[in-house]
Length: 112
Image (cartoon, rainbow, N blue to C red; front, side, top):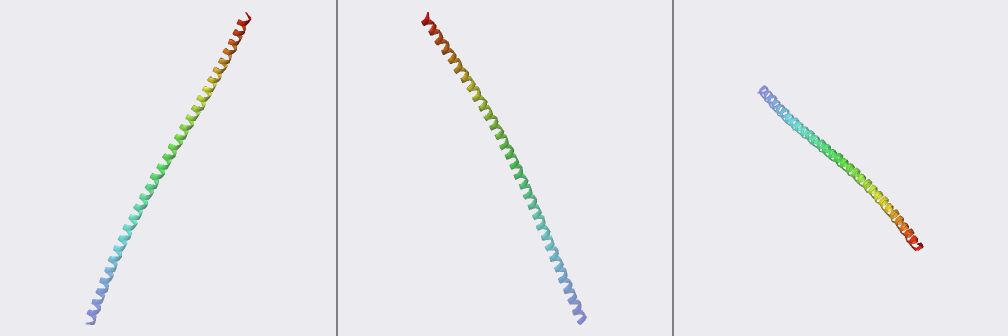
C-alpha cells in the first residue's frame, strides 16, 4: 500500500511539474508576443518620426525657396524703382532744358 501511495504521489508531482512547465511555456510565448508587438510599435514610431522629419525638411526647403523668390522680387522692385527714378530725373532735366531754351528764345524775340 505505501509503495502504491508513494508512486501515486510521485505521478501527481510529475503531473503538477508538467502543468507548471506547460504554463511557463505559455507565459514565455505570451512574453515573446508582447516583445514582438513592442518591436513593431517601435518600428512604426520610428517610421512615423522619419516621415515627420522628411515633412519638416521639405517644409524648410519650401520656405527657403519662397524666401529666395521674395528676395528676387524685392531686387526686381528695387531695380525698377531705380530705373523709374533715372527716367523721371532725365525727363525733369529735359523739361528744364526746354524751358531754358524757351526763355532764351522769348528774350531774343524781345530784343529783335
